[in-house]
Structures are given as C-alpha cells and as structure tokens.
Image 1: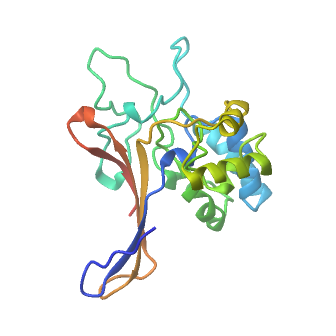
Image 2: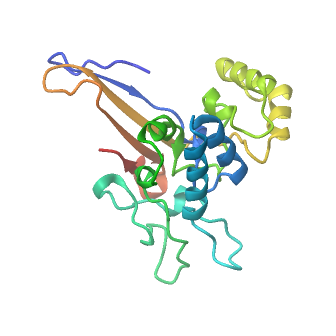
Length: 237
C-alpha cells in the first residue's frame, strides 16, 4: 500500500493484490467455497444461503466437453466495459465464429451477490474483497498472495502451514523443501503460478472535491497477446 499525492491536496491510497490470492468463485473447489463462507460469513444462515446460491449460479461445463466451466480469464478478455462487467453468454475476444462457445458466465459481477435475499449487506461487505471472478490459477489459491483469512479457509491448512506460507511470503522465497511439501499436501486447493491477474483498489483519503472513504476496484489481466500490456476485466463504481 502507498499514498499518492496527486496535487491540490488530493490523496488516494491504492493497493494491488494478486487476484490469485482470492477465492475464485467460478472454479474454486466447492469444499473451499463452503469452508470460506462458513468461517467468515459471521452469520450461519447467511453462509448457507451464499453457498447454495453460488453453487446454483456457477457455470456448468457442457456434457462431454471435457472442459471445466469458465476455464480462466483467457476466455473472458475484451469483455463488455460498460458498467465494468462481462455480459453473460457474449463471445469473448479469443473466439471465432467457427470456434466453440464457452459456457455462459452465470455470475457476471460480484455485486450480484447483494441480490441474494436474507443475506445482510454487512456480511457481503466483509467477504467481497476476498472474492474474485478472474484468476489464472484454475480455481486454486496462490498461498504467496493470499491473506491469512483466505489461507485458513483452505481445507486441511492449519496454523503450521499458515506459518510456513507467511514466512515464505515475507522472505519472498517459496522454492524451499518445506514450502513445496506444504503445497504438495494441499495441491487440490493451492498452487503458485505466474502473476497475471491483479485487483487494483483505490481508496480516496482526503482532498477538495473528493468523497473521503469512497473507493474504486478494478481487476486487470496482463495479456500481451492482444497487443496491449493489460486488459481491464471489471471495475466497480
């Protein structure tokens, strides 16, 4: 996190975590989503409703396709920018007229979860900063990027593994036998891959003409295949 002085007394506060450190709703293992919601929703009834709603909204692969639903942000580049979210069922940039159309994105915006009846906004306010719809790790969490609250939501990960990953992150060294053993033991849920997806969050702190405390969140993907350094996948208003 850094503070940037943009002139005239205006000060925003941006942070840029890796999206791979968040819970990827479209492809995370159901056991991971269930434990994450159960441990962090602070309302058992709301947690149950969220688990059921997400299971129902997650896109399903076509029978016999051999593909996971929503196989990563590669099929979602150049999404609809208006409103900052993708359009369900709309062909992406990587498709051709003759190519197979991927399953529609049932959850097109994180904000859709606010529409689930009987789930308090306060519960979602706490959970949504830890959730993503874009990740390059096929639903697995990058332990070098994930906050402790996400790591402790991984089935089978305890205080010992948490300490191993936090030490590796501080030292910026994950290629050690101890870390590799922990990753191997949790391979259904964690992986360390190339950093491609980022969540840029900007909070306005102070200054004339600014609403202090307001914020904007954007998800970007580094993808030079399109001739651009990065592409904006989604943003909040």
